[in-house]
Image 1 (cartoon, helix red, strand yellow):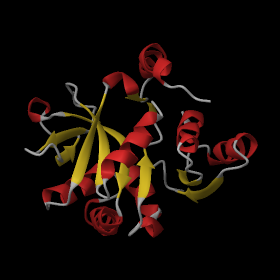
Image 2: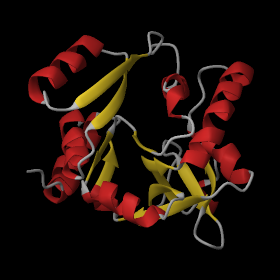
Image 3: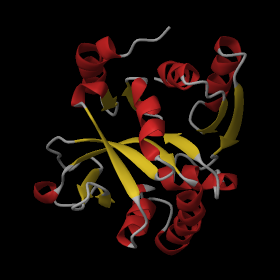
Image 4: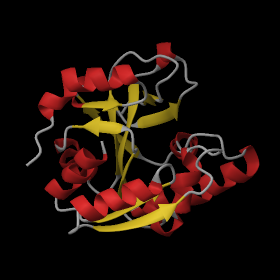
Length: 212
């Protein structure tokens, strides 16, 4: 997955990359050094990865507050064109990829407002009222990221380290901060959580992932 993600970023000339690592961090660092020697990769270590959720890893990169950046969840296998489409569709606003598919309890779900923008994000949202799945590939604007990090830090302090980073995004969109939605085809991205997801990725997504 990491190989394809780095290749996708390189395809749009993004070479300044930050990875939040924890599990098997030495293996990841060595892999990138050997296979992507021309990339400028900074590593931030979450030493508490076994006992914290992704909000803690995300919050560790606090120097991105007030900056434009693309954020990709580490378990997403996707068609590289999604990165290009996010950049093209942002117009300076934050934008996130979604799949307009029926969702279950496991998926991070989204609700869209009357303008097609994201109005709610969360795993516990009612599947019957949701418009699709939050993919985990986003472009965050300077304004959005400036607001996002204080919210993440407050949630960690008040609620603990076991919540998802989507909760912080949910607070922002509920407060009226714009988060555009880029609807992608379901077969263009998949979250790899279980062995059966790998089989599905190879069967349905891999043919759309053209890496040079």
